Length: 91
Image 1 (cartoon, rainbow, N blue to C red):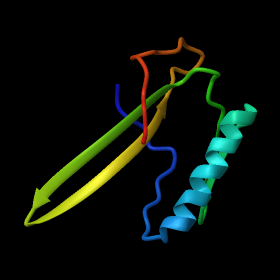
Image 2 (image 1 turned 90 degrees about the horizontal axis):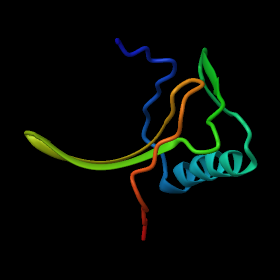
Image 3 (image 1 turned 120 degrees about the vertical axis):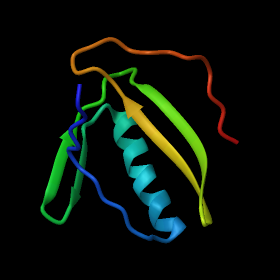
Image 4 (image 1 turned 180 degrees about the vertical axis):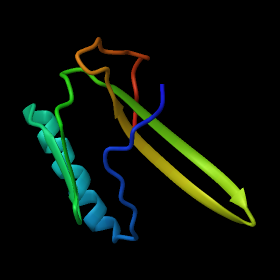
Protein backbone atom coordinates (compact mmCIF):
# COMPACT_ATOMS: atom_id res chain seq x y z
CA UNK A 1 0.00 0.00 0.00
CA UNK A 2 1.46 3.39 -0.92
CA UNK A 3 2.36 5.90 1.75
CA UNK A 4 0.41 9.16 1.90
CA UNK A 5 2.29 12.04 3.57
CA UNK A 6 -0.26 14.10 5.51
CA UNK A 7 2.22 16.62 6.94
CA UNK A 8 5.94 17.24 6.61
CA UNK A 9 8.24 20.01 7.71
CA UNK A 10 11.98 20.27 8.27
CA UNK A 11 13.96 23.20 9.60
CA UNK A 12 16.97 24.07 11.71
CA UNK A 13 15.95 24.93 15.28
CA UNK A 14 17.56 25.51 18.67
CA UNK A 15 17.59 22.43 20.91
CA UNK A 16 15.49 24.28 23.51
CA UNK A 17 12.77 25.01 20.93
CA UNK A 18 12.77 21.36 19.82
CA UNK A 19 12.45 20.28 23.47
CA UNK A 20 9.46 22.61 23.89
CA UNK A 21 7.71 21.01 20.88
CA UNK A 22 8.41 17.53 22.22
CA UNK A 23 7.08 18.55 25.67
CA UNK A 24 3.86 19.77 24.07
CA UNK A 25 3.46 16.45 22.26
CA UNK A 26 4.23 14.57 25.50
CA UNK A 27 1.69 16.65 27.44
CA UNK A 28 -1.02 16.01 24.83
CA UNK A 29 -0.27 12.27 24.79
CA UNK A 30 -0.37 12.18 28.59
CA UNK A 31 -3.73 13.99 28.61
CA UNK A 32 -5.21 11.75 25.88
CA UNK A 33 -5.71 14.75 23.59
CA UNK A 34 -5.23 14.91 19.85
CA UNK A 35 -2.02 16.29 18.41
CA UNK A 36 -2.45 19.11 15.88
CA UNK A 37 0.49 19.89 13.60
CA UNK A 38 0.58 23.14 11.63
CA UNK A 39 3.19 24.82 9.43
CA UNK A 40 2.38 27.34 6.73
CA UNK A 41 -0.72 26.12 4.89
CA UNK A 42 -0.32 22.56 6.18
CA UNK A 43 -2.41 21.30 9.10
CA UNK A 44 -3.29 17.86 10.41
CA UNK A 45 -4.83 16.67 13.67
CA UNK A 46 -4.10 13.15 14.89
CA UNK A 47 -5.64 11.17 17.74
CA UNK A 48 -3.20 8.45 18.86
CA UNK A 49 -4.82 5.53 20.71
CA UNK A 50 -4.01 4.70 24.33
CA UNK A 51 -1.23 2.27 23.26
CA UNK A 52 0.37 3.22 19.93
CA UNK A 53 3.60 1.59 18.80
CA UNK A 54 6.59 3.81 19.70
CA UNK A 55 9.64 3.47 17.46
CA UNK A 56 13.03 5.02 18.21
CA UNK A 57 15.73 4.89 15.55
CA UNK A 58 19.29 6.27 15.53
CA UNK A 59 21.02 6.40 12.14
CA UNK A 60 24.32 7.39 10.59
CA UNK A 61 24.20 8.28 6.89
CA UNK A 62 27.37 8.83 4.87
CA UNK A 63 27.20 10.59 1.49
CA UNK A 64 30.45 12.55 1.36
CA UNK A 65 29.62 13.92 4.82
CA UNK A 66 28.32 12.05 7.83
CA UNK A 67 24.82 12.90 9.02
CA UNK A 68 23.52 11.60 12.33
CA UNK A 69 19.83 11.42 13.20
CA UNK A 70 17.47 10.19 15.87
CA UNK A 71 13.83 9.61 14.96
CA UNK A 72 10.86 9.19 17.29
CA UNK A 73 7.77 7.73 15.66
CA UNK A 74 4.31 6.83 16.90
CA UNK A 75 2.44 4.30 14.77
CA UNK A 76 -1.03 2.84 14.95
CA UNK A 77 -3.59 1.27 12.68
CA UNK A 78 -6.62 3.43 12.15
CA UNK A 79 -9.15 1.74 14.37
CA UNK A 80 -6.70 -1.14 14.91
CA UNK A 81 -4.81 -2.99 17.61
CA UNK A 82 -1.83 -1.88 19.70
CA UNK A 83 1.72 -3.24 19.43
CA UNK A 84 4.33 -4.15 22.05
CA UNK A 85 8.00 -4.99 21.45
CA UNK A 86 9.16 -4.91 25.08
CA UNK A 87 10.51 -2.18 27.37
CA UNK A 88 12.35 0.92 26.12
CA UNK A 89 14.81 2.95 28.15
CA UNK A 90 16.06 6.42 27.18
CA UNK A 91 18.89 7.70 29.40
